[in-house]
Amino acid sequence: LRFISLNYSFDSFPVPDKIDQLDKGALAYFKKIVSQTGRYNPGADLKTDFEKLGLITHSKLTRATQLLFGTHHTAIHIGRFKSEDTIIDDLIIRSPLILAVDEAMNFIKRNISLSYEFTGELKRTEHWQYPLQAIRELLLNAVVHKDYTNPTDIIVKIFDERIEISNPGRLINGLTLADLETDHYQPRHRNKLLAEIFY
Image 1 (cartoon, rainbow, N blue to C red):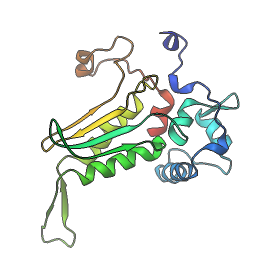
Image 2: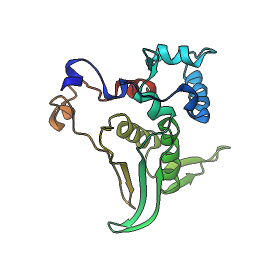
Image 3: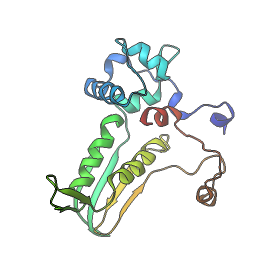
Image 4: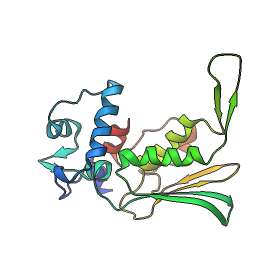
């Protein structure tokens, strides 16, 4: 409640990490992806970019920076289930979140069905068991809206006929499921910086 009253989000608080401790592969990937979107043009100086994006505030890295590009103690735990109590494959991903989402998507794609349609065109058409854009959006929602004060992992369970994605964190600021179904509510972000960066 105090965070909300001060218009803070958990991911905006400073951490003791230093910029040279961040994962260089995650930083390079971010620069490449953000350049392709055209939403932000990164400059030559990483520190200046991060200050503009709110990832550095008062000369300190934020929790969002640590989660996105550094070492943290959160994970995405994915399992492929044959039944409720039979796991045939699983993976725990502890990478910087900017990389972890793609790692999770790769695992999901390896564990869902893919069929091909040949229509006479030069290129065949792929048909995934689930729309990949929808799965990615659900996964991103789990990552962005997780309560990072809770050490519980984001959990993804892949069954033959469904996928379940869960994370720790209640709906905030009095939102209910009924509100979400109406699409007439004021959105709130538990982790505003994560939401902006992944957007």
